[in-house]
Amino acid sequence: MAQTDIIAPQGTAADWTIAQDWASYTTQDHAMWDRLFARQTQMLPGRAVPEFLEGLDILRMTKPGIPDFAELSDRLMQRTGWQVIAVPGLVPDKVFFDHLANRRFVAGRFIRQPDQMDYLQEPDVFHDVFGHVPLLANPVFADYMQAYGQGGLRADALGSIEQLARLYWYTVEFGLIRQDDGLKLYGAGIVSSHGESEFALDDPSPNRLGFDLQRLMRTRYRIDDYQQSYFVIDSFEQLLRMTAETDFAPLYAQLEGLPDIETDTILPTDRVFHRGTQDHATRKKEE
Ligand code: PHE
Ligand code: FE
Image (cartoon, rainbow, N blue to C red; front, side, top):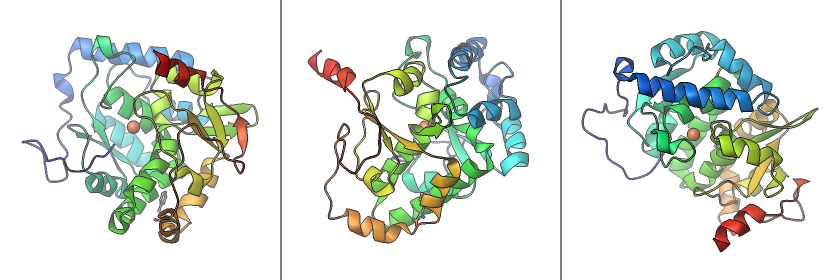
């Protein structure tokens, strides 16, 4: 993930990368990974898109312990030409986009503490690697991520990062996909979260709406709780077609004149898979 206006900590290279220093993980660190891994791999069959589960196998992420990025990168490189590199935390937008545009996925190397099993403020290695990396073994999704990075550099020049960031949020982080046997999860923020991997699919609270690029880039999102709306794509090919093969410059220009859409709004033009009760968000507000 990216963030504007931060400076590189000492010992960080110009591209913000650091060594993963795999040998310095403790037994407890690896045990924490294994615990999170077991919990999610129990939850996800039948819920996550098959390509995600296949990615875990292809990259041999089923091996116990926090993955060694060098080993993971070797497998990924053979498959789709991607690499995983370590960074200290959030990096500036342009650095983030530039890495993606060059098929480098930046990942945090620290792992959460036992009291953070379910809530984290900054993405850790479990979110970044378990959540994001399996789909990078899929050639179509791998191309989408690279194109997104290239699009980010362009959006930066056009002053439209906020709009493009929403696309990342509602696809890469919190996307749902429609399959013959129902909706499935593919967003990294969902598949790496025990609570949200149930909530996003089964809870009556959130809206589940068809993917519409322009609409989605107008939609705000929540960083403090589960999403109030999820957007559903038909396939990764469709996603790639509607983004990589579309010139966003005229879209950004159009969006400038349009107001934001709130996180829970359903428009008459939306393709509604599920009309959310928003009970969860309402309950939270009353607390
Ligand atoms: N096609 C977009 C542009 O013209 C870039 C992009 C590609 C954005 C893929 C998102 C995903 O800027
Ligand atoms: Fe993420």
